[in-house]
Every structure is written in structure tokens, then in C-alpha cells.
Image 1 (cartoon, one colour):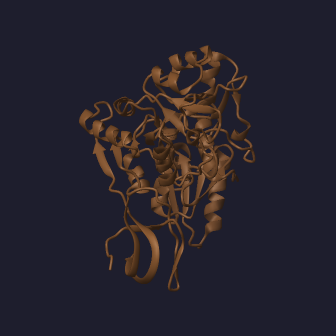
Image 2: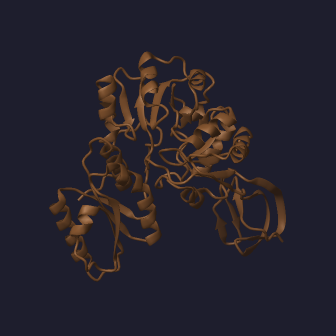
Image 3: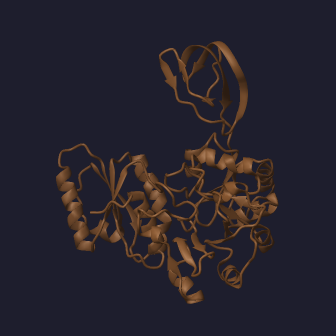
Length: 408
């Protein structure tokens, strides 16, 4: 009898006695047995079986801790070696934590999709540490692209450009363009340099959940699924990079982020916004924008209006909840919090993002606060809305995606 845990069945669905076991594809870990007959213990239950299948032992996930401003080269060399060997590594950037693999290795990139549960038609961003790497990934760097790189790289800007032949289709979801950025984080840059490879890296979380801004978030989502996590402290910006498409006649923002539309206009003039940013029925063209995204376990509903209107809506929500057992989360600004009554019911959990004037602080706290509400086991989260100017565009984009367009 096998009694070592944890294991996953893979490849097919088996019916063992009266119990159906949902199986997972071979995504990580190693095959320890290919066929068995007799008894097997799975999750504490003994089954009589006579099937051929694979048992996959969950991978041990290593953790390397270091200071963001003083990367530990020995530890980073270990992580870089695993990247070279085709493994996946969680690492910090200035935006959120990324899940990295060799961008030129199709089999390595598959492990990103499998660990995250990410649909294969959702393209990935390739991270580089110098312009020489960019030159190998694209057919041409235009003067406009060069100007933007000179101004905003390293930094939270992803540029979409025509891809070269060496970029695997799995990276681009079969499209003829590739999304590239140079992160402004010492650990990320040194990891890419030591691996001597461009690194494909979406956010290091289960697909659809709030993006991770700490190594602990990555551990919660991906432990046992990836080879290692580099803990470099909290990510600063707190939301993903801005994605700017340079393959269109007029540069188009596909995803708002740390570089704002106002900054682009001041640098290069006219910049369009992708229609999918405000039309939920339109198909997003940006990496990381398809499907449900940034969603906690609880339903998220946005509160529209000015301060007094939002306060009245909150009072109505609390009143209507009454003696019901619903646990209500309020994700609000410091200004709204200070105006709330002091005697809130125990069923109301308040999470303060920060002051409305501090868009950087509120944006940095967003995903962490959504995960905090998950820990509080709330049933619904009512979130304050904010003006969509400057960094507020990125903040509201993430809130709208988390809410699935639900407003009151």
C-alpha cells in the first residue's frame, strides 16, 4: 500500500469503486510510478484498483530570502540555474511578483501555464535585462520604441512589437507580436542576467486570483507547483505594468499600469485606449487581461458616487444586512472610514486602502487588501471607486476586473 502524501492522479479520470477522482495533468514534480494493482491510499482513503496511471509527487518549493537593494548573488545563481534547467521560479519585480521560466523553451513555458491554471490563449510578457536581448526577440526596434525604452526602462512599461522567429508561439498565443519589458528591480534584473536568458513571467498566482505583492502570496498559491520563490520583500507599485501596443498606427494602451497615459502624452503625443478597457464584451489583446482576473473568493461590488453618496450606500447596505449572517467587507479610503459610525456591526469588516490623494499608496495596497479579505472569509466586498486619472486608471481597471463590472 502506498501511503506517502501528497500525490496527484494524472492524464485521465478514473472511477475507483463508487468514488470518482478528478485528476490533474502532469505539470510538475516527478513520476514515481506508472502502474499499480491492489490497494492505494489517496488522501487517507484506501482504494482497490487495477488501472494504469501516473502518481506525481508534488515538487518541493525552495525559498531564497534577500534584501531587494542587496541581492544575494549565490542564492540568485541557484535560482538562475533552475531557470536554465527548465524550471519555474517566483521572483519580485517593482510591480508584482512574477512566475518566470526560460522564454525560449516551450516545455519550460508550459509549466507556467500549468502551475497557474492559465488558459493557453493568454500571451505572456518576456522580461529582459538589456537591449541586446530585445534585439533578438523582435524584427525591428523603431525610433518610437527606442524613445520609450530610453525614457521608461527599466520600469513598469511593457512594449508590444513584431516578434522574431526565435520567440515560441506559446509565448504570444500564436500572434505575430511579442510583449517585452525591462523590470526596475535589482533582484529581477540580476536573475535575468545570471540566467543568460529572456524570462517569460506573468504574475505568480493562481490564474484569476489577485496578483501577489509578497512572497507569502506566491507561497499560498503555488507551493508544491514551482521550483522556488525569491523573497525580496513587498512589491512597490502593487499592480502590473502598463502594456503599450506599438504595432498599431497610433500607440494603444492595452492595460493601464505604473506608467500613465498622461506620461505618454507628455512624451510622445497622442495615445489611444484599447476598447476592451471599458467594454467588457470586447476581447482584450493584452497579456493578463483575458478572463476573470484579480478576483478574491468573495463577490466584489463597486460603489459609485461622491463621498456622501458612498456613505449613504454603505449605511443602506449595513441596514439591509440587519440580522442576516452575511459577512460584509468594505474596501474604502481613509476619508470614508473616518466618516463611518463608530458602532459598526461585527459582521462588517473594514479594509482601508489609504488616503484618496495618495493614489500610489492605495494602488500598492489593493491586491494585498483583497487577499486580506479572503483571510477574513467575507461573503461580499463593497469597494469605493476613484477617479480614472493618472495612476487611478490602473487602480480602477483592477477594481472593475475584480468586480466583473458590477456597480451600485
